[in-house]
Image (cartoon, rainbow, N blue to C red; front, top):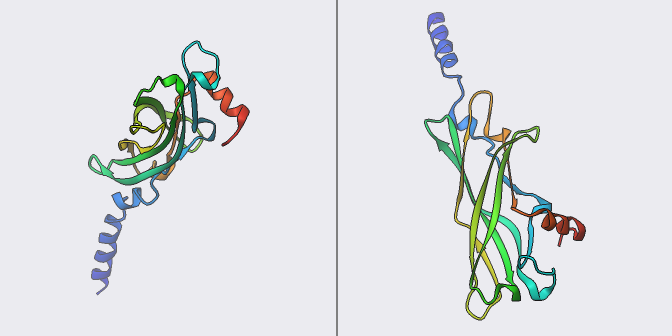
Length: 176
């Protein structure tokens, strides 16, 4: 009987290594950077007034998020979309399609930037309308995981890729 108990304990100890499910317990959730959720863009070299406004857009949320094992359980795949609400201005000259640049960053717990990528989101405005609300195509990130680095050790941050002037405008006017 004692030999059977020792064998059972040995088997349990052999199975105690990290499992993919353990590494996925807390997947990183994407978050929006408050200073970067608004994009007000004017025609190049034009005065910043309503007649020169090309687009006024806002990131309003994250959608369709999911997390799953990838690459032999040594990494996780994080997928999500971004919800964009936009108004087309007179400076767009009636264009029904406009593109906005998004930046996606991955940081560690200390806030160190580990990866950054720029994604272009195409926006289509319906006929006879100057506003639209759309969810982006899925954005996928592959993040390595191990015994020492779990999915919850990462932070995913999103915002518009802004010029210095656009970022300064957002900071001056505050959240909308």
